[in-house]
Amino acid sequence: MYAWCYAIPDTPHDLASNAQNGSSYSGLLRWLVVCGAAPLASCHQTGILDPQGPIASQERLLLINSTAIMLVVVVPVILATLGFAWWYRSSNGRASRSLDRAYEGRIEFVVWSIPTLIVILLSGVNWIGSHQLDPRAPIPADAEPLRVDVVALDWKWLFIYPGQGIAAVNQLVIPAGTPVRFRLTSATVMNSFFVPQLGSQIYAMAGMTTHLNLLADQPGDYRGLSANFSGDGFSDMQFIVKAVPIGAFDSWVATARGTGSALDDVGYGELATPSKAVPPTTYRSVDPKLFERIVDQTVSGPEGPAGAAWCPPAPQAGG
Image (cartoon, rainbow, N blue to C red; front, side):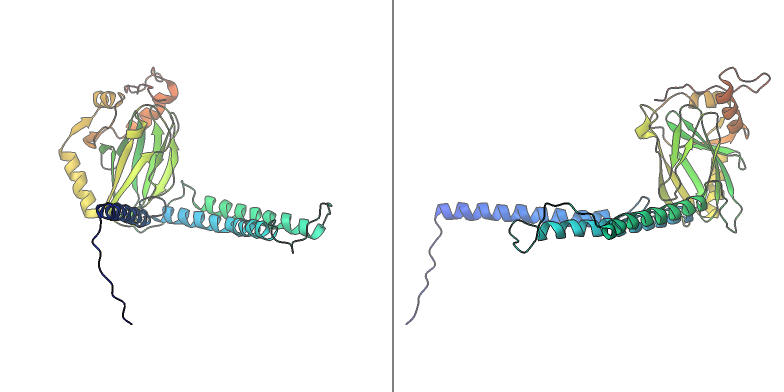
């Protein structure tokens, strides 16, 4: 006995159905490709999970340790919840249930002692780690630290290099492998200085000086931003940290000294005017005491103390 199979031509209805199915399969394939590409794209880290300096590396370790300690409680609770829900389901006749309340001291001891120990351990880890990451603590290194004064304006960042006699706006160039000692203040409202890949967000406040020490392990471009809402131009208050070899840094300083304008009283008055999306700019010279003058004027107000050098006050335009 033989079975013969004949190929029957597709009818127009079958052809349309096959085309529709093919389109569905193609759409499904596209969705699978997109869903598969999303985790791969997320592997390109540029934030706190991709540290490029010793401070950011210690902060990431502190974050991972804290998360692991908390998961000691979170994971068993999730598993126990799922286990109890499965065992005491309505279709399980073997699960005994009782409506009578009863007290069990051993269970209470376990339920409360484990979270208590976790809180104590977590507090100790964060206390020790936070004190080790004191922003004022110098970073041990063979190279001499570079000093940079940072002023938050509406809506840009002013970086002053007192030792080099230059300044830059929305661009911070530092030598890789060299500790950088920052002094920070604000000429307007409170702001927050943050370079995620280098670590340690810190506030810049009018009339006050905060200190921060950072170091970039290797050359690269790292995103810096304002982490505190300060008004209409807040979203554009970003800058690029360029970590370069020491030779390239010296070349940049020499170039900055030969180009651009001087940041004198008139120049600072124009710079202090609120503006958005300001492109990176360098100044060939700057008053080495400009940072102190800004701090003094935000403390004493526009009039300033008697006999003080005059410097145009920054308009208070922030949020």
